[in-house]
Image (cartoon, rainbow, N blue to C red; front, side):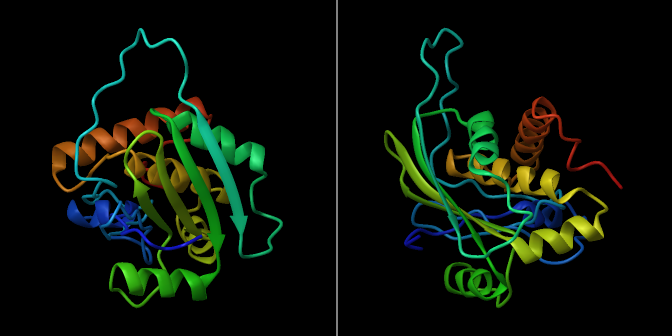
Length: 208
C-alpha cells in the first residue's frame, strides 16, 4: 500500500466531536489528498474521504456497483477475517464502482502512518486514503489490528464485529461521507448502523 493520500477522521474523532469520551485512540479515515482520523467507539464528528458530497444513487439503477478488492496483511494473526468476509463487508457499504485495498497493520506501521498523515504520534484504529475520486473510486483502508483488538476488549465487543464496523466506516469515508457537523455525523452513524444490522452485527454506538 502506498500511503499517498490524506486520511479523514475516524470513529473516535466522531465521538469526540460530540463530547463523548473514547477508550483509547480512534480510527482514521484519510481522504484523497487530505488527512484525518477517528475511532469506531466514538460518536464525535467525522470527516468524509473527499471534498464533494455524494449524489444519491437512483433506486432504479440496474447493475450493482463493481468492486475490485485487494487484501494485504502486514501482520499474521488468526483473528484476521477471510477475504470473502472482507468482501462482504465492503460490498455492504459500496455505493459506486471502486478499487479498494484493505490492509491490516501492526502498531508500528499504524503509528507511522497516523503521524505522517494526521500528526498524532500514536496508532489509530482505521485510516482511509482516497487516491482517485473518479470512476471507479480508488483508495485504501488501513486497519491497525492491535488498536482494534484493544478497543474491542475495552468496549466488550466481539473483535469481528468491531473490525466490520471499522471497514464499513472506512468505506463510507472513501465515498465522501463526513462527520464534521452533527447532522452529517448522525446521518453517517445511521448509515453505518443500518449496514451492520444487515450484516447481523449489533449497533456499534450502543452503550455497553
